[in-house]
Length: 80
Image (cartoon, rainbow, N blue to C red; front, side):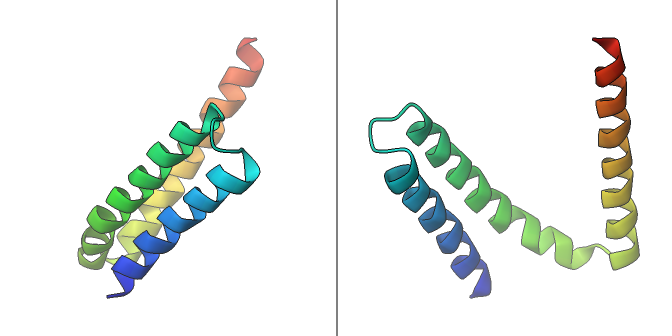
């Protein structure tokens, strides 16, 4: 039940941002709708998977991803 609430809240937040912040004809409105769809699908897929992964493994995975992103940002900064 809570999964549906999270997905609905994500879609609603995207819709509100699209209408109020950017206006209905804006170029960003379709992008926000795609993002809301991605969040919804990701929530429905990710929550059941997360329930099967031990917390320690999840923490290591997220930590490794953050370190990799940080290293890539540093490398990209010095490449330019």
